[in-house]
Length: 56
Image (cartoon, rainbow, N blue to C red; front, side, top):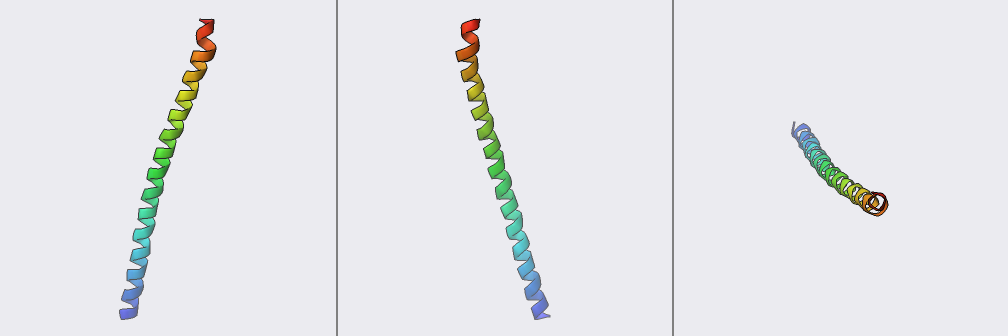
């Protein structure tokens, strides 16, 4: 019974770690996505100002 309890505790610890890793990965992805979005917006703004504005 002690061995089984020890195994269950080990699995619980791994599960907690996996959940925490997943949360961290989700946060990183969210920030990466926001960073990418801002980069694309900056490029579009640059293109509009340098290419379209002279035409208008």
